[in-house]
Length: 297
Ligand code: MN
Image (cartoon, rainbow, N blue to C red; front, side):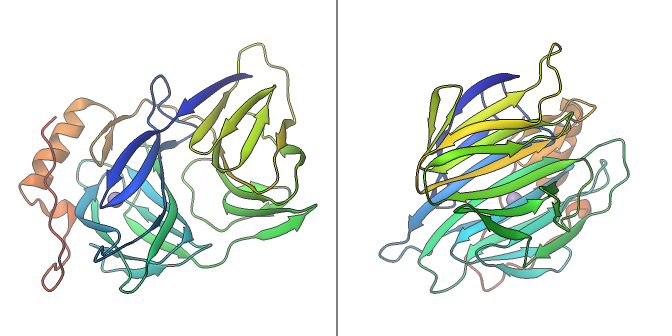
């Protein structure tokens, strides 16, 4: 097992401080998880309207939002309008291929004064024909054991299974630890893993990891089968375990697009900026939101 520490880049996304964990130097994906933003925790002050992300497209990926605090309204070009609240997942699938895509907006709900969320992207297998879709998961499997609360956001863990739609084998578990302890996390053969520390401290192999640090765990050729990841966690620690099987093909990212190669990305930039119907649209009249422009590759 090789272990790397990835440190976040700090960004501003739609007015919210965001720690971007993936892509990161030398590490582009963990399983099919290819993008990881930890947004907030933020309290909106003065006349801040909170998160206001204008209309933008996606290709060949799923956006996966895990809400911790606050409420955000999602609208997409399929006609879905869905408020996401704490302990819920929104999953939007852009579909695959150069004739498919989706577009959406995200806004803090009026009167909501805070935001804390993890937003991830999942690269889709581009050799599979996948239609655009949107799913909202209001309740997920959750349980408490020895002062540790686990919630499965996607995949299966410890005999529990989330209903979240998957196109490759993936795992997402939210873990909140109240009392300091040694903790063993279950591992599945063939998975790569990441541990994103949101609060507190996680210790692995004698090394400490704090908020907005991502532990990346990948297998080496000589690894024997290992059943667990053995951690020490401080009291009041919160982290997300993500994992999955590596995708069988390479992926490249530009702006909000994923593709197999640069030509596909360039086509998506051109199509979006020319208003191609593959991305659909949303009526922005009466909102303060803009249609975003794709930067040229
Ligand atoms: Mn988006």
